Image (cartoon, rainbow, N blue to C red; front, side, top):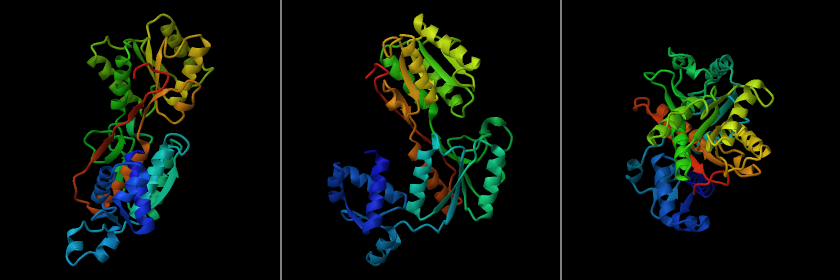
Length: 360
């Protein structure tokens, strides 16, 4: 069980029963009391529970039952934040776990989360943001479509409420907007190092260059290759798919170039983004009688269905739930303490090794 899953389990127990004993709960989860005690410390730092001898309570219950003066020494309950708005481009891919994490954090804080889906349309996002603010949203969690479109001031910087970007970075370094996102450059380097550990040297990056994630994947991939002292990527090892799909010439041409690179031995490993293209790559390789990981090792960037491929794909998995949870926490802290230093949070993804890559 991951740490965030334990945190949610602790919060559910405390909300349901009013308190929780560390030793009893550790036994239920099958983990050590030390682990649960550290989880309680993390939640107490967030103001979600109050630590008591041997366990945890709801902060408001602790304030009512604590000895005189003790409640005053505990972290004060934050002012009430009633509604936060959340605008994401999709509710079908990538963002469901982000939304789930945000919803759970909002519920733990007693905050209502209002959700809108923009369909990657910046004009729709602007109207959704205006409507949410008019309806009383105290702050917005936003994954805008046009973050990379220019270096000037962005529309969300002029809103009347605080904004936390989700899985996006401000278009200009000097912008003061806070954000929470996955460190995708780290994820790409993680995959490159995994291939190197398995003895691969001719590592390809096979991706759609127009996605919001692609600049950071390129950054991490190039950095990982340079750090290993390998030749810089060329037209063979950096393959950019078009926006089309199977059957489209802009898709089929680079796919055939990739297959030929594997046949000729110029490619022995590939990081593939997005995940659905990783599944297609696996199918094409097998149809061409090329073995995985024998002829080429594969890692998918993202892990929603990679494990379900007929040959389970190794994958770099962004911590989407933690991104959503942390975004709400950051926004609530901003609203409670407007003068606090601004923060940008990068959450590290993890590599899940399966049958498609040969390093252990």
